[in-house]
Length: 249
Image 1 (cartoon, helix red, strand yellow):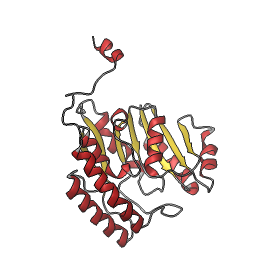
Image 2: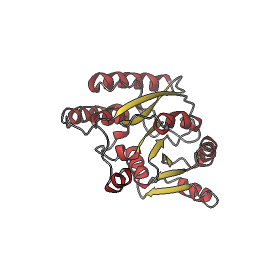
Image 3: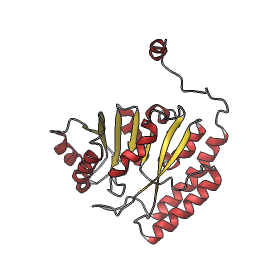
């Protein structure tokens, strides 16, 4: 099963068009669900989601009473997800849902490597302001130099990963910006897929360049420390449950 997880904070006007686009993008999957995480919105986002749930059995909502941030919302959505494969995207319409099939394909292929944990989207032709693009470019270069994560763009919300692998990772605020490094730290392989990007739908950005830079400094050094303290030995393949071993026998 495939689970689509979308964190949303004050995105009421984007709910309906985003749900419609995701439904179109996922129409070819035999078994999928959409988990929208209302992260303490104050603008009617929760009501907008509720209004669409009455005739969409595949649509579910997780609610935070107060805003916890994007990483907290993603984490809550993954915990609630029923699928073995999870795909995330932002709730502001800048990540085109049409990219979902391309993103999850490497993980859902019959020949998928056993240790492939994450497929990270990397935006091309970003539709952001010049200042935001430059700030992101600098941050990505600094992060890549310090963490050696071999990823051009970790800020892209379009990511697909194995649910069990994600839940092995250490959880902390802003962890969503460092998923390639964290998956690699846990011993998983990373794949990259170029994805489209577009202008925001309704609403306004929740971050400024200064806010991103300020928290990014602390996070970057923290993740670098985590990588240095990582375990050096890992099983050659993911451990199976007792039921799984019995079935194999």
